[in-house]
Image 1 (cartoon, rainbow, N blue to C red):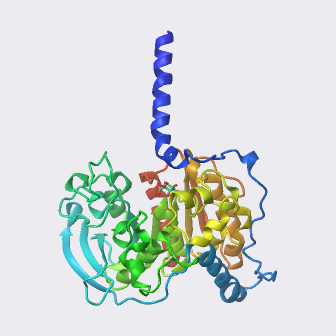
Image 2 (cartoon, helix red, strand yellow):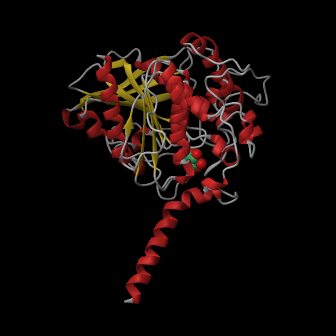
Image 3 (tube, rainbow, N blue to C red):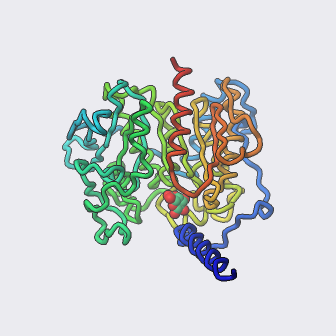
Length: 434
Ligand code: GTR
C-alpha cells in the first residue's frame, strides 16, 4: 500500500519543480512574497485626480489634461519616452501563398525597412488571413523565437536575428535553426483562428531589439540617437518601449494592406510581450482592442502590491526593459506616481482583455484583476462599462464588459482557451461596431 503513495508523491514533487523551475531561476536571489496579508500599505494614485489635486469630471478634462499627464508619468518613470521622430518606412512583399492552411488562408511575408537605404534594421511580418472574409480583423502579436517557430510550415523564412541559446531547441550559437520550426505552434492555434474569420500578423520581437544586455546598443535604439549621446538618459526608453514601437510600425504596414481591416486590429501579447502590447495599446489609439495575457509586473499587475515578481526583481533581472528612473522604485513601489491600473485606463474607452492563470503566481493574478477594477472609473467617465465585478471571478468563468477578465486553470502560457475567449470578446465588440 505504502509504495504507490510514495511514487505518487515523488511524481508530484518532480512535476511541481519542473513547472516552477523557470521562475525559480529569476527569483532565487530574492525574498519573494506571495502572502496577501504581508502586502505593505499603499495608496493607489487616482486616475481621475490630476497631480495638482483637481478632480477630473469631464471627457474634455480627461483627454486634454489627465490622460496626457498619466502618459507622461509612464514615460518618465516606467517605460521611458517613445521618440516622436518618424522613420522612412518601406515595405517589400517577400511571398504570397493564397492556398495556405489547406486553402483556407492567404499567407504573406512582408519585410519592413526602417531606413531609406533599406540597408539598416528591418523586421519580417508573417501574416495569415482567412480567405473567406476580407478585409479581415487581425490579431497583431509578437512571437518569442522567430516566425518559423509558430508553425511547422517549412516555407517560412528563419530569422537571422539573435536568438537566446536553448539546450532543448539545440541552439548554441544564438542562431535559429530549421530544427526549431513549429516549436511554439501550441501557442498559435492558426487553424482555429482562421476558421473563426480572424487573421494574425506576427513578427519576432528580436528583429526589433535583442532581448539581452545588448538590447540598447541595437540598431533601432541608435536610429534615434546622435553619436555624441553615450549614456542612456534616465527617462530614455528601454526594450519594452522599443518592442511596443515595433508593434506600431507593424500597424503602419497594416494600414496599407487592403486585405486587413485597420479598424479591427487586436494588439495582443503574452508575458513580456504582453507588457509591450499593453504599452503599445496605451500609446497608439489605432489599436481597436488590447489583450494582456499573463503580462504581470510592468504589464497589467499593480506594482504597489509587490506580490510575486516585484519592481526590484524585474529591474535586476532585466535592467534594459524599463527606463532607468524605474529603478528608483525598487523596494519603493509605494512612491510610484503611477500604477498599472492607469496604464489600462489609458486604453479607455477601447475594449481591453486582461487574462491570468491560476498557477501563475509570479505574475500576481489578483494584481492583474485589480488593474481592471481600478481603471473602471475612467471607462465609466467615458460613457462605457469598466469591469462590473469587485471580486475575482471563479476560474474559467470569464467576465466580459468593456474591460474583460478571466483567470483560467493552469500555468503561465497562452493557450487555445485564452485565444477562444479573445475571439469571443472581439466578436462581441466588433458586432457592436457594425
Ligand atoms: C520572466 C519575467 C516575467 C515575464 C516572463 C516571460 O522571466 O520575470 O516578467 O516577462 O519572463 O516573459 O515569460
